[in-house]
Length: 160
Image (cartoon, rainbow, N blue to C red; front, side, top):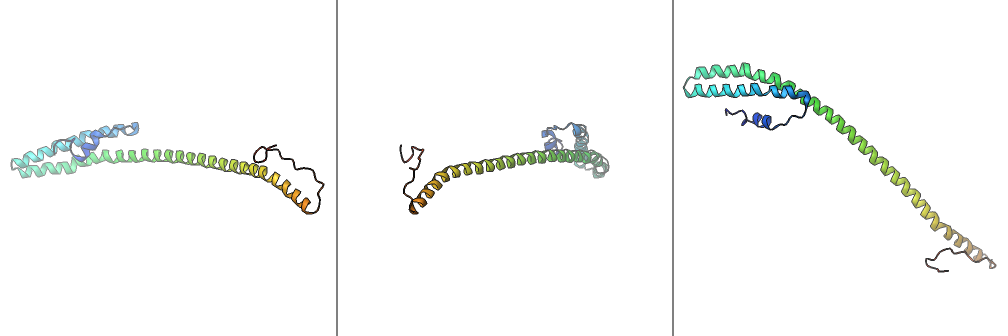
């Protein structure tokens, strides 16, 4: 494979859109030794096709001892730079998630408090006439018959 855009690394490299200024120089620096690797690989293939296996081996050793380490000198800091960027974004993301969770929790607590207060108000409204009716029934049950009429201020079941 002599075309640098076809190998696995080349497919990634030429399709990747670097958005991080912090590693842009390192990213661009990967291209030259990568192309050199493919050009030299082509020389190995040509030497082998000519039957010059000693020359092919010599060029292969140059690749192994020269070009690959050169590529790795750039690739390792590039990878470290990506890891640092990832770590920063991960911390920012986790902080945003924590803020969202805090907001959701606050809204949930507020909704629970409002629900409790609303339930208390409704129970009080329902309970008040029932207590008055119960007290009235106890008085009648105790023999008091000269009681005032119960004041019913509603038009629900018993119209005025």
